Image 1 (cartoon, rainbow, N blue to C red):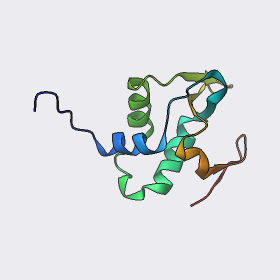
Image 2: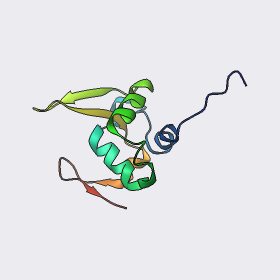
Image 3: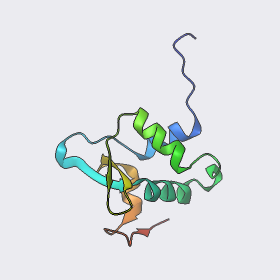
Length: 100
């Protein structure tokens, strides 16, 4: 029991939906807000737990690289192109379409 670590619901959601990039060419940059919005469309019953602060902290703890860019200094995280969440996002840029 000493090495048992309880995972939160948000940890389990991130385990399923988001993977770290394996190589430099396997990188997909997603804004933190887009990531949380997509997760909320998939898991609406976690609305009190899934928020930008919680997800951002967990991604940092897991070693995901963050990049701040643009005039408003929006935070983007580098995730793997093979992440399950990528399949739910269509299009590029600001006009993303959410499926599901």
